[in-house]
Every structure is written in structure tokens, then in C-alpha cells.
Length: 99
Image (tube, rainbow, N blue to C red; front, side, top):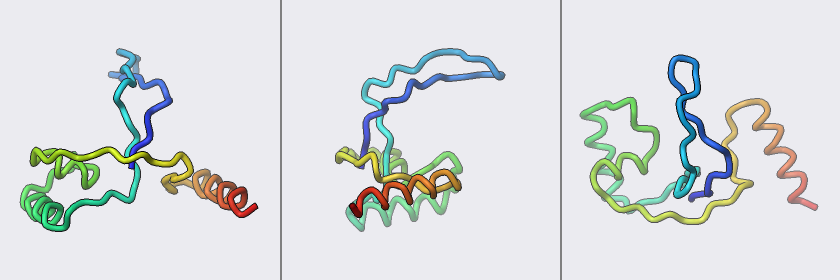
């Protein structure tokens, strides 16, 4: 699932701003991510052999194998809960959805 970026992105180096990254065609990728079982299984098996810490999600495994991946519209309410703030935000979303 993908949501178009609305934030302005900046690239930094050595503690200083270097450039503004155009957000055209950039997306926040959400979970769940779904794939054909045989494709994702093979991608994970080859990943286990190489152990690349730069790989951050399942999509990236398949991208590196040249697989085309479709973008499916995501939902802003589908947030990643990582910090206490995220948890509180999730609670607010749930409370407002049950009305």
C-alpha cells in the first residue's frame, strides 16, 4: 500500500542541508505488503545468503531481483506504531473511528 508524500524532503551531509529532494513520484510504503508466495520465498532465501542490512522491506528484496511491483492506494490512518506518540495517535484514530 502506498501514500503519496506530502512532506518536503531534505538531504543532509555532515550536519548541513545539501538539497531539497523533489517529492514527485515518491511514496510512503505501508504494510501489509503482499506478493506471490513463490516470488517472495525465493527473494528471502537469496537474502539470507547475502545478509544485506540496506534492505528495509519485502518490496526491496523483489526490486533488487528486477520484479515489477504495483502501487496500491494506502490509507493515512494506517500508521506504523513505533513510539509512545504513535501509540497515542493510534488510540485517537481508533476512538474517532468508533463514533
